[in-house]
Image 1 (tube, rainbow, N blue to C red):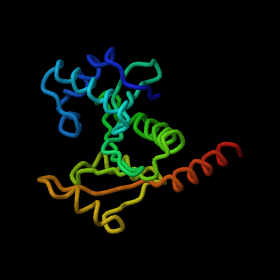
Image 2: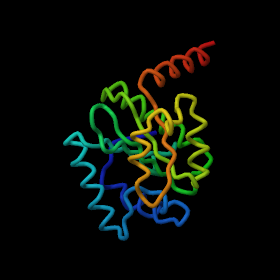
Image 3: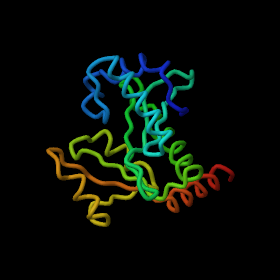
Length: 179
C-alpha cells in the first residue's frame, strides 16, 4: 500500500501529478520531470535528516498512484501532504494510505500529532478527511496553528490526529473486525 520513495517511480508519479484535477492541490509543484526528480531526491535526503517522512502510495498491482508525506517535523508533530492520481479517486486508496502511514508514524517514528491543512474550497479532500473517525477539526482548539497556516492567500481548515486517538480508534476497528 505504501513504500519508501525511490527514483524509479518518478516518471509515473509525475504524469499523474500533472493532471489539472490533481496539480493545484499538490504541495511540491514541479514544472518538469527533471524538477520532480530533483525534488524527490531532496525528500529522500530530508528523510535521512529527520525533517520529513515521504512514502509512495501503491495500488493492488504495486504501481505508484500518489504520495503521502509528513513535513515540517518538529517536537513530534508535523503536517500531512497527500495526493492521489485522478484515475484512482473514490476507490478507498486515500483512507487506506492514511491509516497505514499514520500507524507507521505513531508506532515507529513516535509522532504525537499530525496536522492536516485543507483548503476550504477543496470539498473532495474535506470529505475524505472527515470520513476518518480519528481526525478532529482544529480551527478553534489549535488556534495558534490555525492562524499560522492562514497567513497566505489561501484559506484553510485545520484538522489534526493525535497518537492516542488514532491508536484507540485502531483498537476499536480491530475489535469490530474480530467479532
